[in-house]
Length: 314
Image 1 (tube, rainbow, N blue to C red):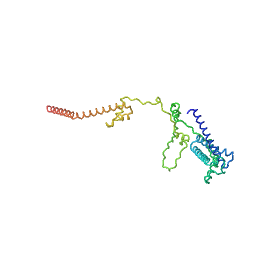
Image 2 (image 1 turned 120 degrees about the vertical axis):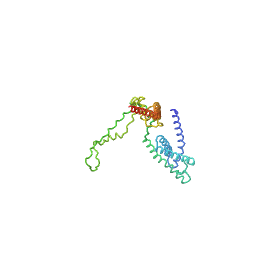
Image 3 (image 1 turned 60 degrees about the vertical axis):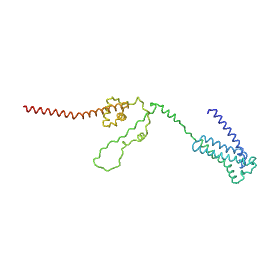
Image 4 (image 1 turned 135 degrees about the vertical axis):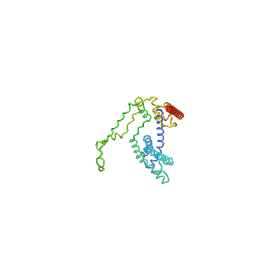
């Protein structure tokens, strides 16, 4: 809402409250005269009741928490009391011309006693509750409201250079090694030397958490060494030597060798091809082994026959 609209709204509220107070002022003045107040006291009596209502309303807008609930209770109680007294003023016509008996607000005695007690206790309550509300308003300290979006944006926009330097880690105190005893000794309570005991400042620094230094820039990071395809293949062979064929997947190779997914797929295909060729060569060797042994056996038998023939000829 614009400033002009707010001013008009507040002005209209003040006008309505002033008119309502004027209407209630007539009834409360007659009630005060009926319970024994003189002319001046009867004229000021409406300010005591309805004035405290306005004070409680302002305190409600300022205070918070338990104090605000207290101000709301005071506002509700005095509003109900003013309503009851205005209602009694409308039921008893003699109060309009102040021709009613002094201290007589109702025909039934219990109701009359309660109304007189209510009318006479409101000024005392205004002194107590009004003083308490004013003290609470004067001692109220509003909590500063911080916008989370602005604070988060500010911390995000800060560069690494603007961040505070991390505090260096305190040196860890080292205890010198003691030589072993030459003979068994009695167990005694260990006495910590003054040099080995950490100072209170060092202990407090060690317990204090380190501040976040922000994200490390890409230019300051250590680049991993680049490996050639032959080196990757060699590492993959040694790492998957004992693997089963079902475990030879691209994801497993990528995690073990720490390479990209594309290179892991190439390594998988190469390793599978090598295993297939190895099994085929082994099968061929097993199939050719009997024939080779038979050929060697025939060759050995032929040489033995030739040697025997030469010996007989000799």
